Length: 62
Image 1 (cartoon, rainbow, N blue to C red):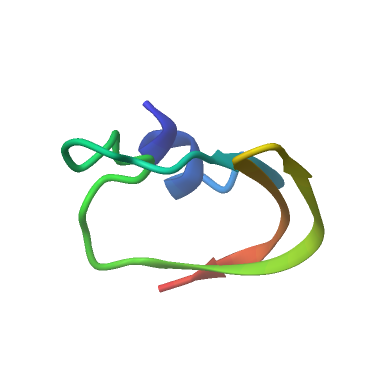
Image 2: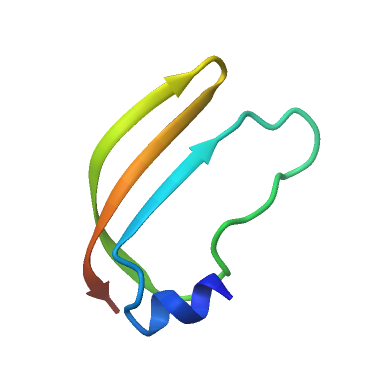
């Protein structure tokens, strides 16, 4: 569902929390495909072993 919102240009920011994966591949956030987003990193925060990344979407690129 996220992919549809991104394609339509309805997402203006992402706040992503990254957690280390010990077993397996983890859960992919984005669908595989041939597209790019123009993002600017606004802020990072660290919580124990997690990292929160706050991005602004500057526009859709391809």
